[in-house]
Image (cartoon, rainbow, N blue to C red; front, side, top):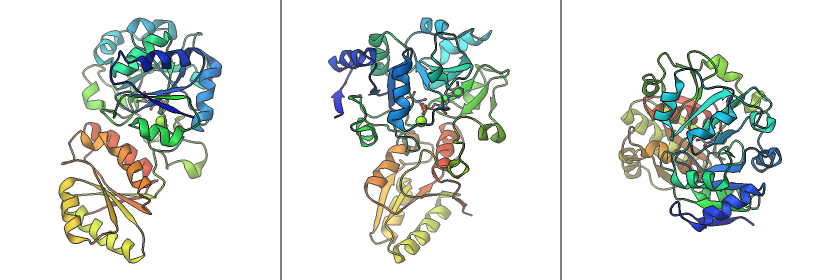
Length: 352
Ligand code: TXA
Ligand code: MG
């Protein structure tokens, strides 16, 4: 039995209870501004190991340690690169994770046996209160079953974790909606391993010369399952997802045409698109389609905030296929397209 416990603010009684469970070695899901995390005491190897079981996560994929104060960083790492402290103080708390060389305090299971450790100081007040109350760094991946879209609400966590963990702290919807930017500080210049709310352009001022990971290096990163068949599908809904990339009107026309094709084959269609596109499609198509709004326009924060939520909504609606609209690869749009490409398993269409 998994209980959802409301945590409307940082004084909620549920936070104390959750911290107690963590101290006893149990797992608790909690909100962050990016996505919900599946937390365990990050200094307790047995507790951290239980995360892999609950998620069905490959053992070779390391976990992020979540801290609430900068003074919690030093005991976990061998050193902080020269000049990085100011940037950390600027970007933390926030939706960004940094990779350091680990200290001996960090259990092997957290780093997947590797020499480095990922650390993040989240901004969400519930997350921060929980870390403080637990009095230990909290190891937490996203609280989805491995391969599924990350959860951005307590209900989405329950969908994947019911019966697997004792408690979910409900702090409402995650405000950002995609996972943190992961930046490797063990190399010079630093490298962005995973795009998120922050991207190269916004990080350049704090880390001059910062680079995006090359596609070749990304292939061998621990985020990519070793089995070649699974290499691409990740963050994925149950229904196959096709990604449509191109100018809005051309994409709308192509969505209408393809939807008619799917409907003729009696397939239930889910469409993730912008409000004006949904209006146009509703006027043209007659039923058999479930729409999930990506917001009013491609640069609106709702695009990221609803990305994973929409995938889960369409899965729950029982659609056979999902057609999703791409966004410009700028700002958080880089992270959105990174996740949509993975969710599509390589099935994207360039529409002219
Ligand atoms: O926003 C987030 O980052 C959320 C919230 C809960 O904090 N967490 C999250 O965790 O997305 P997870 O486990 O789903 O993704 C962590 C990513 C993975 O791609 C993992 O391979 C990478 O960070 N990672 C963790 N430790 C690493 C390390 N030592 N070196 C390189 N990559 C690492
Ligand atoms: Mg994840």
